[in-house]
Length: 283
Image (cartoon, rainbow, N blue to C red; front, top):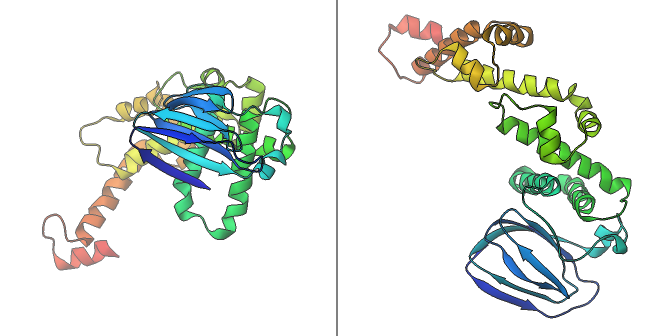
Protein backbone atom coordinates (compact mmCIF):
# COMPACT_ATOMS: atom_id res chain seq x y z
CA UNK A 1 0.00 0.00 0.00
CA UNK A 2 1.24 3.49 -0.83
CA UNK A 3 -0.31 6.72 0.42
CA UNK A 4 0.40 10.43 0.68
CA UNK A 5 -0.44 12.14 3.97
CA UNK A 6 -0.56 15.67 5.38
CA UNK A 7 -1.20 16.21 9.09
CA UNK A 8 -1.19 18.76 11.89
CA UNK A 9 1.11 18.36 14.93
CA UNK A 10 0.57 14.99 16.60
CA UNK A 11 1.76 12.53 19.19
CA UNK A 12 1.44 8.95 17.92
CA UNK A 13 1.80 5.86 20.08
CA UNK A 14 1.38 2.21 19.15
CA UNK A 15 2.20 -0.71 21.44
CA UNK A 16 4.21 -3.69 20.33
CA UNK A 17 2.07 -5.97 18.15
CA UNK A 18 2.87 -9.30 16.50
CA UNK A 19 6.01 -10.26 14.63
CA UNK A 20 3.85 -10.70 11.52
CA UNK A 21 3.04 -7.00 11.20
CA UNK A 22 4.24 -5.14 8.14
CA UNK A 23 7.19 -2.82 7.53
CA UNK A 24 6.63 0.90 6.96
CA UNK A 25 8.80 3.07 4.71
CA UNK A 26 8.23 6.84 4.93
CA UNK A 27 9.66 9.69 2.87
CA UNK A 28 9.02 13.00 4.64
CA UNK A 29 8.45 15.81 2.15
CA UNK A 30 8.31 18.37 4.98
CA UNK A 31 8.24 18.31 8.75
CA UNK A 32 9.44 15.08 10.36
CA UNK A 33 9.36 13.47 13.80
CA UNK A 34 11.40 12.16 16.69
CA UNK A 35 10.58 9.05 18.67
CA UNK A 36 11.29 5.33 19.07
CA UNK A 37 10.79 2.15 17.07
CA UNK A 38 11.17 -0.59 19.65
CA UNK A 39 14.17 0.50 21.71
CA UNK A 40 15.82 2.35 18.80
CA UNK A 41 15.67 6.14 18.81
CA UNK A 42 14.56 7.62 15.47
CA UNK A 43 14.78 11.22 14.28
CA UNK A 44 13.55 12.22 10.83
CA UNK A 45 13.64 15.54 8.99
CA UNK A 46 12.57 16.81 5.53
CA UNK A 47 13.86 14.55 2.75
CA UNK A 48 14.78 11.71 5.13
CA UNK A 49 13.45 8.17 4.56
CA UNK A 50 12.82 5.83 7.50
CA UNK A 51 12.21 2.09 7.65
CA UNK A 52 10.04 1.12 10.63
CA UNK A 53 8.99 -2.28 11.93
CA UNK A 54 5.31 -2.18 12.85
CA UNK A 55 5.70 -5.38 14.88
CA UNK A 56 7.68 -3.31 17.42
CA UNK A 57 6.38 -0.51 19.58
CA UNK A 58 6.27 2.87 17.86
CA UNK A 59 6.07 6.34 19.39
CA UNK A 60 6.54 9.59 17.47
CA UNK A 61 6.17 13.30 18.16
CA UNK A 62 5.76 15.35 14.99
CA UNK A 63 5.11 18.98 13.97
CA UNK A 64 2.92 19.75 10.96
CA UNK A 65 4.27 17.38 8.32
CA UNK A 66 3.71 15.58 5.04
CA UNK A 67 4.99 12.21 3.89
CA UNK A 68 4.79 9.46 1.34
CA UNK A 69 4.27 6.10 3.06
CA UNK A 70 4.81 2.62 1.70
CA UNK A 71 3.60 -0.45 3.62
CA UNK A 72 5.38 -3.72 2.73
CA UNK A 73 4.32 -7.19 3.92
CA UNK A 74 7.13 -8.69 5.96
CA UNK A 75 7.31 -11.92 3.95
CA UNK A 76 7.69 -10.01 0.66
CA UNK A 77 10.59 -7.98 2.07
CA UNK A 78 12.44 -10.91 3.63
CA UNK A 79 12.07 -12.99 0.49
CA UNK A 80 14.83 -10.70 -0.84
CA UNK A 81 17.13 -10.42 2.17
CA UNK A 82 17.84 -11.88 5.60
CA UNK A 83 16.18 -10.38 8.72
CA UNK A 84 19.65 -10.06 10.27
CA UNK A 85 20.73 -7.73 7.45
CA UNK A 86 18.36 -4.89 8.28
CA UNK A 87 17.81 -2.71 11.34
CA UNK A 88 14.35 -1.30 12.19
CA UNK A 89 14.41 2.42 12.70
CA UNK A 90 17.12 2.98 10.09
CA UNK A 91 17.01 6.42 8.45
CA UNK A 92 18.48 7.38 5.07
CA UNK A 93 19.45 11.04 5.37
CA UNK A 94 18.34 13.62 2.81
CA UNK A 95 21.02 14.40 0.26
CA UNK A 96 22.87 11.10 0.64
CA UNK A 97 23.10 8.96 -2.50
CA UNK A 98 20.80 6.18 -1.24
CA UNK A 99 18.14 8.64 -0.05
CA UNK A 100 18.30 10.57 -3.32
CA UNK A 101 17.88 7.41 -5.40
CA UNK A 102 15.08 5.90 -3.31
CA UNK A 103 13.20 9.21 -2.94
CA UNK A 104 13.24 9.65 -6.71
CA UNK A 105 11.88 6.14 -7.20
CA UNK A 106 9.11 6.47 -4.58
CA UNK A 107 8.00 9.83 -5.98
CA UNK A 108 8.08 8.53 -9.54
CA UNK A 109 5.89 5.54 -8.65
CA UNK A 110 3.42 7.77 -6.81
CA UNK A 111 2.99 10.18 -9.73
CA UNK A 112 2.71 7.30 -12.24
CA UNK A 113 0.04 5.28 -10.43
CA UNK A 114 -2.85 7.23 -11.92
CA UNK A 115 -1.95 5.85 -15.36
CA UNK A 116 -1.11 2.30 -14.19
CA UNK A 117 -3.39 -0.64 -14.95
CA UNK A 118 -4.10 -3.60 -12.71
CA UNK A 119 -1.83 -5.68 -14.95
CA UNK A 120 1.06 -3.29 -14.19
CA UNK A 121 0.83 -3.71 -10.41
CA UNK A 122 2.81 -6.95 -9.90
CA UNK A 123 5.83 -5.48 -11.70
CA UNK A 124 5.47 -2.18 -9.83
CA UNK A 125 5.33 -4.05 -6.51
CA UNK A 126 8.42 -6.12 -7.32
CA UNK A 127 10.37 -3.02 -8.30
CA UNK A 128 9.30 -1.09 -5.20
CA UNK A 129 10.16 -3.84 -2.73
CA UNK A 130 13.43 -4.57 -4.48
CA UNK A 131 14.47 -0.91 -4.44
CA UNK A 132 13.69 -0.61 -0.72
CA UNK A 133 15.57 -3.82 0.13
CA UNK A 134 18.55 -2.71 -1.94
CA UNK A 135 18.65 0.68 -0.19
CA UNK A 136 18.18 -0.40 3.44
CA UNK A 137 19.84 -3.79 3.78
CA UNK A 138 23.33 -3.95 5.26
CA UNK A 139 24.26 -7.31 3.73
CA UNK A 140 23.97 -8.86 0.26
CA UNK A 141 20.56 -8.96 -1.39
CA UNK A 142 19.18 -11.38 -3.93
CA UNK A 143 19.31 -10.46 -7.59
CA UNK A 144 15.54 -9.78 -7.41
CA UNK A 145 16.38 -6.78 -5.20
CA UNK A 146 19.69 -5.78 -6.78
CA UNK A 147 18.22 -5.25 -10.26
CA UNK A 148 15.29 -3.03 -9.14
CA UNK A 149 17.68 -0.89 -7.13
CA UNK A 150 19.95 -0.53 -10.17
CA UNK A 151 16.89 0.53 -12.17
CA UNK A 152 15.92 3.02 -9.44
CA UNK A 153 19.47 4.42 -9.43
CA UNK A 154 19.42 4.84 -13.21
CA UNK A 155 16.03 6.58 -13.08
CA UNK A 156 17.21 8.94 -10.33
CA UNK A 157 20.33 9.89 -12.29
CA UNK A 158 18.28 10.42 -15.46
CA UNK A 159 15.82 12.69 -13.60
CA UNK A 160 18.72 14.68 -12.15
CA UNK A 161 20.24 15.10 -15.62
CA UNK A 162 16.97 16.38 -17.11
CA UNK A 163 16.60 18.99 -14.34
CA UNK A 164 20.21 20.21 -14.63
CA UNK A 165 20.79 20.40 -18.38
CA UNK A 166 21.77 24.09 -18.14
CA UNK A 167 24.69 23.26 -15.83
CA UNK A 168 27.92 23.30 -17.92
CA UNK A 169 29.58 21.15 -15.22
CA UNK A 170 27.05 18.35 -15.61
CA UNK A 171 29.00 15.17 -16.37
CA UNK A 172 30.20 11.83 -14.98
CA UNK A 173 32.31 13.36 -12.19
CA UNK A 174 29.41 15.37 -10.74
CA UNK A 175 26.96 12.47 -11.09
CA UNK A 176 29.35 10.09 -9.31
CA UNK A 177 29.69 12.53 -6.39
CA UNK A 178 25.95 13.22 -6.20
CA UNK A 179 24.83 9.58 -6.23
CA UNK A 180 27.83 7.88 -4.62
CA UNK A 181 28.55 5.82 -7.74
CA UNK A 182 31.86 4.69 -9.15
CA UNK A 183 32.54 5.64 -12.76
CA UNK A 184 32.41 1.96 -13.70
CA UNK A 185 28.96 1.53 -12.19
CA UNK A 186 27.68 4.80 -13.71
CA UNK A 187 28.89 3.77 -17.16
CA UNK A 188 27.27 0.35 -16.73
CA UNK A 189 23.92 1.96 -15.82
CA UNK A 190 23.97 4.02 -19.02
CA UNK A 191 25.18 1.35 -21.44
CA UNK A 192 21.60 0.90 -22.80
CA UNK A 193 21.58 4.62 -23.73
CA UNK A 194 24.94 4.64 -25.48
CA UNK A 195 26.85 6.04 -22.49
CA UNK A 196 26.25 8.80 -19.96
CA UNK A 197 27.92 11.57 -21.99
CA UNK A 198 25.84 10.65 -25.04
CA UNK A 199 22.67 10.60 -22.96
CA UNK A 200 23.35 14.09 -21.56
CA UNK A 201 24.12 15.43 -25.05
CA UNK A 202 20.91 13.96 -26.52
CA UNK A 203 18.77 15.35 -23.68
CA UNK A 204 20.27 18.80 -24.22
CA UNK A 205 19.62 18.65 -27.95
CA UNK A 206 16.04 17.45 -27.41
CA UNK A 207 15.43 20.33 -25.01
CA UNK A 208 16.91 22.78 -27.52
CA UNK A 209 14.66 21.41 -30.27
CA UNK A 210 11.57 21.89 -28.08
CA UNK A 211 12.64 25.44 -27.24
CA UNK A 212 13.21 26.33 -30.90
CA UNK A 213 10.28 24.51 -32.52
CA UNK A 214 7.51 24.78 -29.93
CA UNK A 215 7.94 28.17 -28.25
CA UNK A 216 7.84 31.77 -29.39
CA UNK A 217 11.34 32.92 -28.45
CA UNK A 218 10.64 36.62 -28.95
CA UNK A 219 13.92 38.53 -29.10
CA UNK A 220 16.07 35.71 -27.73
CA UNK A 221 19.01 34.76 -29.92
CA UNK A 222 20.10 31.28 -30.93
CA UNK A 223 23.26 31.53 -28.83
CA UNK A 224 21.11 32.14 -25.70
CA UNK A 225 19.15 28.94 -26.33
CA UNK A 226 22.40 27.02 -26.81
CA UNK A 227 23.82 28.35 -23.53
CA UNK A 228 20.61 27.62 -21.60
CA UNK A 229 20.74 24.03 -22.85
CA UNK A 230 24.33 23.55 -21.64
CA UNK A 231 26.32 24.21 -24.84
CA UNK A 232 29.17 26.71 -24.57
CA UNK A 233 29.86 26.91 -28.33
CA UNK A 234 27.21 27.93 -30.88
CA UNK A 235 29.07 26.30 -33.79
CA UNK A 236 29.44 23.02 -31.88
CA UNK A 237 25.74 23.17 -30.95
CA UNK A 238 24.67 23.79 -34.58
CA UNK A 239 26.78 20.89 -35.85
CA UNK A 240 25.37 18.43 -33.26
CA UNK A 241 21.83 19.71 -33.83
CA UNK A 242 22.03 19.04 -37.58
CA UNK A 243 23.48 15.57 -36.99
CA UNK A 244 20.61 14.63 -34.67
CA UNK A 245 17.62 16.23 -36.41
CA UNK A 246 18.70 16.58 -40.04
CA UNK A 247 18.07 20.35 -40.01
CA UNK A 248 19.71 23.50 -38.70
CA UNK A 249 18.46 25.26 -35.54
CA UNK A 250 17.26 28.11 -37.77
CA UNK A 251 15.19 25.70 -39.86
CA UNK A 252 13.66 24.27 -36.67
CA UNK A 253 12.70 27.80 -35.57
CA UNK A 254 11.10 28.55 -38.93
CA UNK A 255 9.28 25.23 -38.93
CA UNK A 256 7.91 26.02 -35.47
CA UNK A 257 6.78 29.52 -36.49
CA UNK A 258 4.93 28.11 -39.51
CA UNK A 259 3.23 25.43 -37.42
CA UNK A 260 2.10 28.00 -34.82
CA UNK A 261 0.77 30.28 -37.55
CA UNK A 262 -1.26 27.43 -39.07
CA UNK A 263 -2.70 26.48 -35.68
CA UNK A 264 -3.58 30.11 -35.00
CA UNK A 265 -5.45 30.50 -38.26
CA UNK A 266 -7.27 27.17 -37.96
CA UNK A 267 -8.35 28.07 -34.41
CA UNK A 268 -9.72 31.39 -35.61
CA UNK A 269 -7.04 33.53 -33.97
CA UNK A 270 -4.93 36.21 -35.60
CA UNK A 271 -5.87 38.69 -38.33
CA UNK A 272 -8.62 37.98 -40.85
CA UNK A 273 -7.37 36.22 -44.03
CA UNK A 274 -8.99 35.51 -47.39
CA UNK A 275 -11.13 32.39 -47.25
CA UNK A 276 -9.16 30.49 -49.94
CA UNK A 277 -5.85 31.11 -48.13
CA UNK A 278 -7.36 29.88 -44.85
CA UNK A 279 -8.48 26.71 -46.55
CA UNK A 280 -5.04 26.08 -48.03
CA UNK A 281 -3.27 26.62 -44.73
CA UNK A 282 -5.64 24.29 -42.90
CA UNK A 283 -4.94 21.31 -45.16
